[in-house]
Length: 200
Image (cartoon, rainbow, N blue to C red; front, top):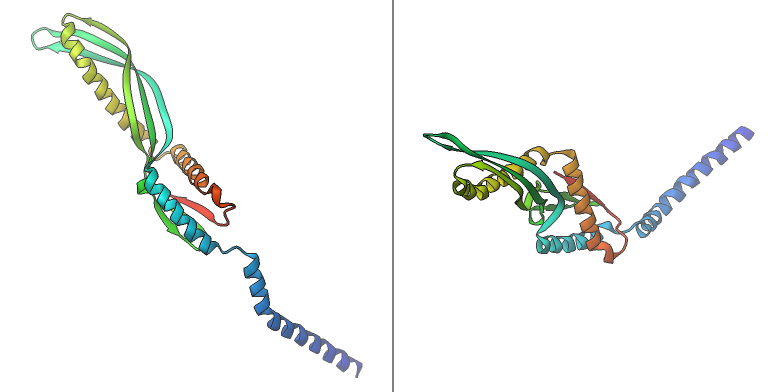
């Protein structure tokens, strides 16, 4: 008899707990919603702000290049063969970054996803630091110095993009620079309650 009474009390207790859980569940959901920020609305508003900023900013510099090199060239004439040579010590500088107009932005439930474009040389230039000539026809070689420099400028640009374009370091530089930029745009709007995701 005692065992039956205990079993009834135990069963009644479990049933009471279940009923309490069922009754309070809707209120618990309301409480959780109140405690958790509405990221959907925040994402929608701030993605609109970011879109406007991206459209107006156009380009973002990620890194700079400042390199020195030596260029050797010879001047040849059909009858005489090599009649002179030119050695140019040069400095190549460039600004590397991304075109912000090419950034793709997608809104998710808890994050904004950015697909970032490939890096490109935004601006670059080359200058001669020192020129050494050994020739018989200096005027002919003088005329080609600028041409030689511009050809080297193009080579430097292509070499950088081929070797660095897809490197992990370049990708990290792009992500870090882009992240810092968009965070500075949103500083005035308080704490952010959602995530950023970056894709290639």
